[in-house]
Amino acid sequence: MVNWFYKIIICLLLIGCNRNDNCRPAKFLVGQMVSNERNFVLIDSLYGINTVRLDSQVYDAFIRMADSAKKSGIDLFILSGYRSFYSQKTIWERKWEKNSSSMTDKENTMHILEYSSMPGISRHHWGTDIDLNSLNSEYFKLGKGALEYQWLRKNAKHFGFFQPYTSKEKGRKGFETEEWHWSYYPLSEGYLDCYLKNENIESLIQDFHGAQFYSKLNIKENYVRGIEDAY
Image (cartoon, rainbow, N blue to C red):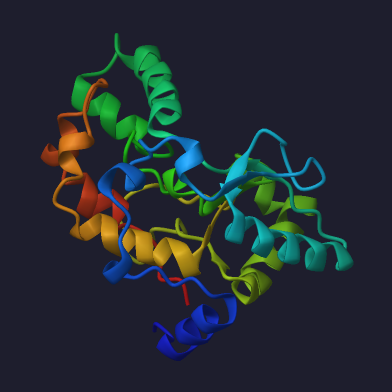
């Protein structure tokens, strides 16, 4: 059950609920605005790969979370943060070419969508979402990785973060489970609301292989909306 009271408290404490009355333009939501039009910062190598950019508010919250985790013997390291439409397109096209000779276009699209976003639908476009420690689910099942994941599941919410892509056993649609992917709720919830209501999004989802399946597969409903409730 969604705990609305806890959501309100998180937003008040961490500041920055970005509801649909203060929506960003469609180009922001699909990652097509240049970085100097965003309040993004480069992260320090102490906290991750130092070419990664994040929204400054998200980065501040992550530092607080990482420093707290460190006191419990847990190391959190950012592997990926903001990705533009064009960087996501590079990832998508590389995977597309790998499978294009053995799959139909629809099969290829569905296969890539298990773990990778189409350009224009990634939460990484917002600078609110981070990938931590490993991009392999097996890493988080045993030993050090399991301890890291247990800590995040218990404590990340206190810093405003949640795991959007949890198990699909209860009917969640879209991407497969990603233990490494964490989202900063006080901003990303508002951006998601804006994205789902923006009627100009589809016109920007173009110029890459499989773009036609954005509408054919109802990607906005089945993948963009396909996340776990935050709290």
